[in-house]
Image: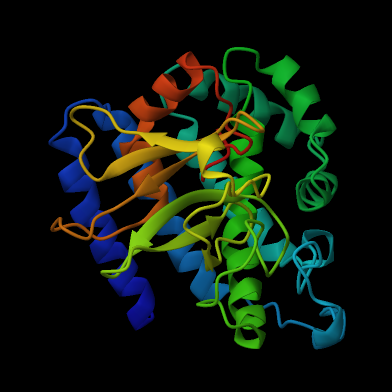
Amino acid sequence: MSTSADSLLRLLDTRLKQLQKKNHIPDVLAALVKDVFTMQVHARDEASTTLDESLLTPREQLGPDVPLLPRESFPVDEALATRLFDDLLALILDAPAPLGDAAKTIDTARKNGAVDLPALFAAYISGDDAPFAAWAEKTPDAPRAMAFLVQSSLTPGLRAVAQQAEQHLKLDEARGGNCPVCGSLPLITELREKQGFRHATCSFCHTVYRIPRIMCAFCGETDMDKLSYFTAEGETGYRVDVCESCKLYIKCADFRELDRKTLALIDDLDSLSLDILAVQDGYTRPTVSALGF
């Protein structure tokens, strides 16, 4: 295991212990997150896809709406993703209902040759949700089960490719809200350093990049009268940034005065109550969680 992988797993363990002290995340969910993330970290070390630099957008053509490597151009380590899919499926077969029941349905279909993994991988890469909507009808009590399996299976390989692409960009320079590597929407943001520099984590390739502090991460609104945020009692270190122009929201972690390190997957889960409050206030989140739910 690489040094970076070992560091990630130590951080995961620390954050999960902190998370479980809050008593609002079921132990079974925390255990699932730990197992999935651990499998993904090991899989990232095994990813063998080498980025073909001819796929990269020429530097002179890059811009707010033109990423370095559009998500549909990302190469897929299909063998790695397939193995991880089957490992993850085996992991959740014993999960409590409804996820466990959905896993059994998918497992039966997989054994009967009714799961077209290459097509599902391609659909996720291109942003086509239709195949996942069809699977949601087959597992109505856990409609995102297939999306979770596919997204979680592909993420390590996609992240490995993104890390190669990142070498061609200056990610510490503020830019638009969409990921400069793949063009996808951000999953969550965080504030860093004394100045509160704002960084976003991509929902697709998990690249971390800097964006303007005063700007809607989705529509680009910069009018301060249309931008605001709120916090919630008991959710120390988190806030929700909202935009009145597009009515979308994104959560933000600010651990600068806390003994806590950011980890997007855990930050997103840890601040789940803020999603509920934001939706109740009429705002919408345009991305799913880091696990596809």
